[in-house]
Image (cartoon, rainbow, N blue to C red; front, side, top):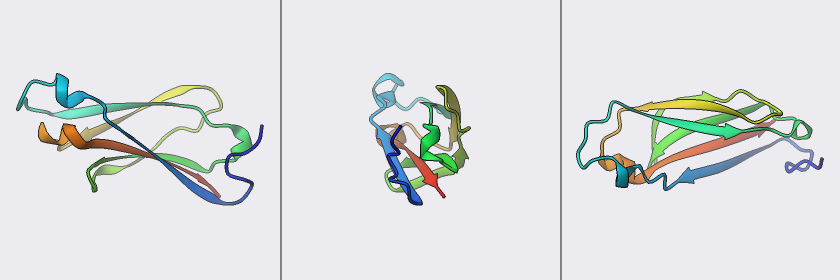
Length: 101
């Protein structure tokens, strides 16, 4: 298949947001951690060197970037995010960054 990266070294980022957790978690409930599961697959023709997930609340990064396992078939990787408050759930985002070397 055709590469969405156009054959050159590149970085592409997709931001996921509006998970709805703020509306289903009871108001002011204590939060130990949030598990974010990323379902993904990578086209081998894109020749990606890495795919990384990073949690944010607004512009603030939470935790360390988590490397996802590259796979030509659909798989799920789970990233655990700690240190969030109830209010943070309203603006929780996850950025997925793919790099082609």
